[in-house]
Image (cartoon, rainbow, N blue to C red; front, side):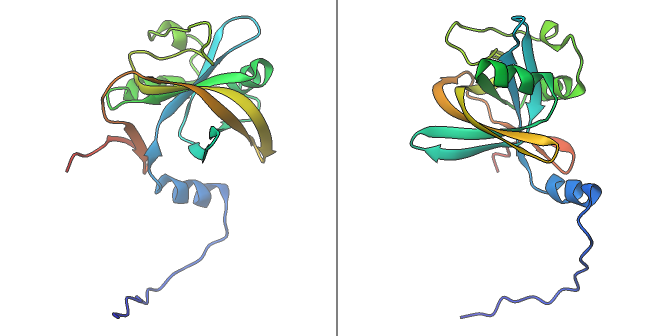
Length: 174
């Protein structure tokens, strides 16, 4: 057996919001837009890279959303949401939904079927999961929303959009 231990000078710093943000930026992830509909019937949505599978049986995922966001408020009120996983050609949509622009749904095509958890970004997502809220948990300035997926809609056979090191990238075929 080969010893693969490497001695490297390491420097530990106190965990601060900035050091934590820097650490997490080095962990690339897929990009989604989480959507729902407000009590007024208007669509709500925000970019989210904090999406994680939780269970296959029942099919459950989680999303982490900023406490106080209109999207989170709509999800909690309605009890449903959609996770639009963006494809490689949707960087502008990811940036738009991260910007807080109040007219974002006027700037992209979307649709919402009666049984949908929230609006589907039909042109920009490769897959959409419609979910029912099963639990929420507040930690710090975010709320984790657990959703049981009840519908999965495959939109496009395009590679996913990725985010890491504060940059968008596409899945390499190499």
